[in-house]
Image 1: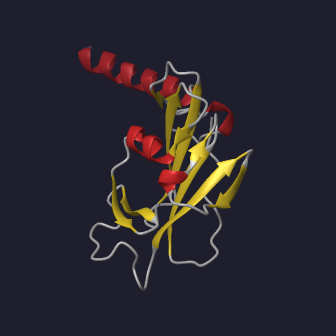
Image 2: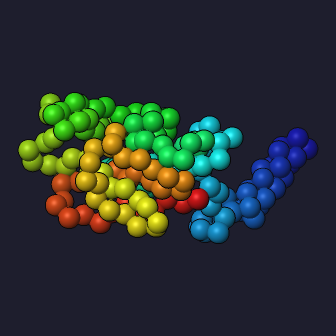
Length: 160
């Protein structure tokens, strides 16, 4: 009898999970917005990271109270692991989420490096400054792409 109750409970859980959108093909209309760090603040900005080793981008959201948030604060509050190196032009990102796992030089002579994009008004542009100089407004984003391509496609736009 107890086995039948457990089996019935498992079937019910699977059925309810499927009805709620779990276990099936996900749809954009049911994708929840990512939780934001400091969620009580009025504005939010995003970090979108596209790894070479994964097709699924990583998205982080950070809420902020002032009119803008700088790239350094956004990266720090996003919870992403990242490593930088300081150059004459400012800080450069060498590693995000342990990609690459090891590096001898921040900018590889051959192979992929992190490329920075800035999203404003629903469109990405290649950053013309380092991430620490970027100022983002409400619902804007930093996009990081680990690539060896000279003119890659930008990351996907953040999901709200």
